[in-house]
Amino acid sequence: MSTQRKLIEIKNLIKYFPITKGIIFQKQVGFVHAVDDISIDIYKGETLGLVGESGCGKSTAGRTILQIYKPLSGKVLFKGRDLVELDDDGLRKMRKNMQMIFQDPYASLNPRMKVKQIISEPMKIHDTYQGKELAERVEHLMTIVGLNPSCKDRYPFEFSGGQRQRIGIARALALEPEFIVCDEPISALDVSIQAQIVNLLQDLQEEFNLTLLFIAHDLSMVEHISDRVAVMYLGNIVELADRDELYLTPLHPYTNALLSAIPIPDPIKEENRQRVILEGDVPSSIDPPSGCAFRTRCPLAGEICMQEKPQTREITPGHFVACHKV
Image (tube, rainbow, N blue to C red; front, side):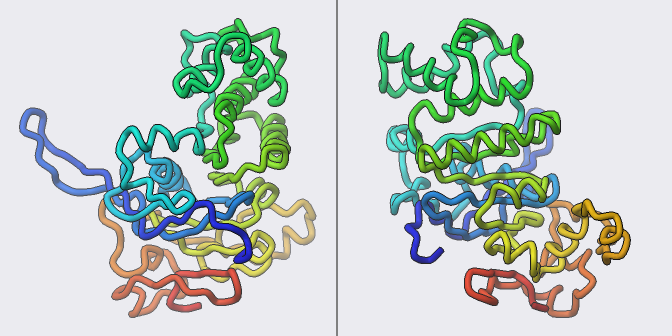
């Protein structure tokens, strides 16, 4: 992976949301530690899976990388340019290269706009296509995502959830981006449709040489689509490795627990395998634990885990872990 070109470099990215109290005179009383100092590289043409429990900061990380949320501190380098330092005009120009597919296909499409308006809107804003070319481009995008172009004058409510997500994918592709953040794009869909959307994303990635950040909590689907996988817990990246390496030899106790929850289709293996059951609940991101964020649920936690936040170390080539005990 080191021989590949880095498309995005994320360095010490922090995003906290302020908590305020009071109706008229609002007073800040704390922070939600959504993304707590993450550093990661994304390589050209790869799919990086980002997994973790609900509320761990995955979606916030994706939106902060795209500057939908402005980070508290840190750098996001896209081809060497720091997105955090760009003004609104500079960021607007960079938007053509970076797009997002949202989690909820029912909420991410304007119900008052026809499909052709939804897909053409980015191209009108950036003035990339006009007139007849614009209409042809919309029909072409609908075709490549598996929609009938004759449906272009319909409204979102006339489509199923899977079809709406295809509209969202067509809109994301409209400006020919290099990088797409897929924010749990299948979690709101029927199980029968999920595989279709994942296969479509893989085909589009190959056809257009896309780089994907695939955010999900379905570990089996992440294993299917990803080249590398990053595991997130309470705003921290706790483990990062190639997909096969991570699923065969997980090193962090949290990753081990996550993977042990994946059902095995073989009933004998399923019955005999060792399950890892974590005790307690995920701590509040308003008041995270001192030291290691995972220590309150970790079976290996010791004195050092209470006092020091573990540094991310490369244990084997390309396999990074943030744990004192590994």
